[in-house]
Image 1 (cartoon, each protein chain N blue to C red):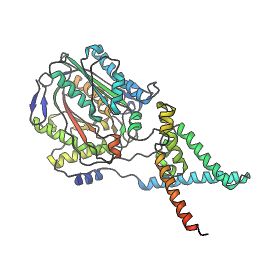
Image 2 (tube, each protein chain N blue to C red):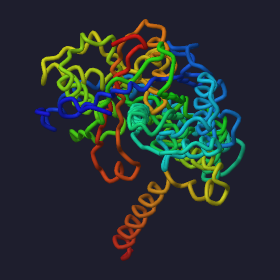
Image 3 (cartoon, chains in turn brown, red):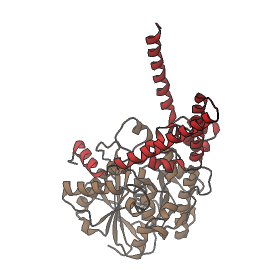
Image 4 (cartoon, rainbow over the protein chains, first blue to last red):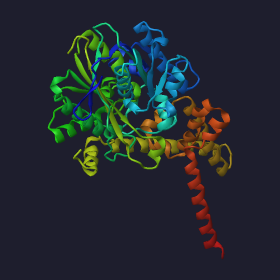
Length: 342
Length: 148
């Protein structure tokens, strides 16, 4: 049974384990620093499909299938999948997963979806009613551009604060029974929305940084820990501006220095200068693919022992943006520990 | 959180790098100027080929529209416009691109609900306000010149 620590954090006593995970990505992501660590790379961003929406659905399905293969499981063995994406009505999740015959919960957490899915799957496991559950999410540069910005061939200019939506997907399978080397989820925190009035959809890092600050500060307070107690505090995907703002807020309000332990998925996935992605990567697939292909592997291999994963989301819609509403940010936290770690 | 919205707005502004304004303006000036020279060159060539000046101007505009459509469809226009900015957005090239790009992209929703319905999603406001302004201007012109 989950135990509440402090105000907002939950300790999971059953330690749901990550049986397998997979991160897939497009060509630009594969050309980045994480390069060949992705489980599958799609050089053709259409994935051979006639629409970008179908392409993203296929991307999500590929991540889910890859995770299933690595876990040695058939889809029927998964008792629930928590999935979402950036498209209206969770298009990629619905159409990507509809053929798998897995009980489905659609979730929307914008770019924080991987952490939201993981924590919901972990809580489902903790309830005792599930023996295997999946969290999955995706994003595709072209579907995101279409929905939130301009047509792809439109000749607009991006501001220096803009982030580049990652074409990628991640899926992780949690299981009650797994080998002892499998990383486990130790603690989770459902994020609280924070809105400090940012209205610029071209500066989502600034919109999300206060939420990341709140979640990290609450987590450290509830668990009575400091950044030095973690191998890595992995935010995603604040990009350059959001990362700077998070560190400044943390220093200014709590006197905590995050600079040594905090890294951001939006900065890890691309070489910002060489790949011309302005402030860094974004999109659900950004933190999902980085976590599922790289970080979980490091936890399994033992090069990382405990990682506080704090995925951030900008919870705006195309309608509220036009109405001049500010952008509420959110950040969910999941503390992942290596198989042998206490 | 103790930081106020106003304080945070100032923090966010400080954290955001500025656009390289001088470089952007210079590029826009050079590219925009080149587009105008191209159009003027076309017009003069046509006039030299004994096309009437008014017709030559129209043909030059049409040539720019067709050229933009081809470059947009080939995926080249957005790469040029990324650098040229207003240099390609302000001349008729920008207008043509804003019609062709959604038309192309929305083909996946079909020719009626996609291409035709979305073709003016970006250019629509320009047309509405352009036509409205022209009507107002025309009315004023009419009232002022009615007497003679």
